[in-house]
Length: 301
Length: 270
Image (cartoon, rainbow over all chains, first blue to last red; front, top):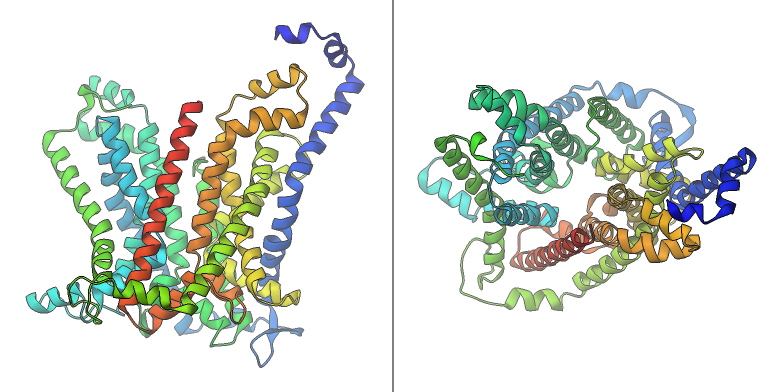
């Protein structure tokens, strides 16, 4: 910092507490003004809409399904306890959990395999192969399964020829396959990032201290890759819980999930307060999941 | 940061991992490849190969409603990306470069929420809000909504880029009597450019991919390509959709390589 010494005004500034406080205040205003446009935008088009959902979930309902703010009621929340609703919620929860667990079971060894290739160029190449499906259009990728599972599609014909499976389209397994296919890359990327960043010499040290291969993995690699496991699980769990496109394309009447159920409330079922109440529940679950995530101290997304 | 000799996994484990790896890649790519293959089939029944043909691509380009939705998609994506990139970059700078200002913590939290909230919830939030403030649904509400979710993604990408930057470079510029604007233009912006472009590309992709939010906040007569295609898919599977899908896949693939190019340029700066 020799440059500073050539500038006497800088020194006197630092010496004067009054000026320093002023400069600090100016700096703080500058930060605020940088944030102001996006802050205002997010308040107006994100925070207020969020509050409106909460308000509408307690409102009455007009014949058109839109909310009426003259009579407040808990009807929407009471309706949450209907067996149909509970069944859909349970189905969504089990599907999202199962999808997260299976994505983790497939994705972890997969990410580990990529991260442990010794050549940097091999790792980069494999990573690009993961990135392509990750960035590809979700709708198109889901549609690909619709084609595969169609009554004339290859998977259906293989099933018919071998007698191993029947028509899968519009069934629960089809929706599950779609969710797995759709969200697997979301699990792999954070896992890979965590494993790639890891200091492998720690594993080496563990091995030098006579840890078995499995012991070193369990005691060193697994704990160190935990941020990736948590980030990946959240990135799979939350969108699976709110999935809309997948059940709409691959599912049928008996495979409704919370995501398409909510949209139905705003379109054909015309019950906006109830749709809002379901959303409030999803938001709460999501908030708890993220709080757990930040609590565990993993700030890497 | 590769595996060293001492930590090498046993040979059989490595072999199992390799097999698992290629099976996963097969799972990820086979469905897409089958779809691309069928888009060139001359048969009008999906699932039956009818010889090589471009007819579905010709039919796609002749479909006016589809082309209209494509035009809408591009307009929405471009406008929302530009606005979200400018706002998101400023937001990233506000959070990373200015540590103390009123509301910084709540802004930080608010900035993360649109990223983790499920699409469906965001969609109904915005629909309810637009009806509450009596805003007519149309292309404008689609654009407003896309900006709302894209700001956060851009801000996060720019912020992580800024976190890796040495602030002393900017301090040095100011010590050499560069104004704040000059420092930003000549030092900060070039250094964070890979992050800004990466964020913009992410915003563009998200905007071009969105179905749920657009479907709920769109007005009569103005829809985007994914929502239009979604409507077609819900009715039936046609070879024309295969052709559109293939074009969309190629577009995403181009975006992946462009973004990798930006990343590589960013690494050269470091």
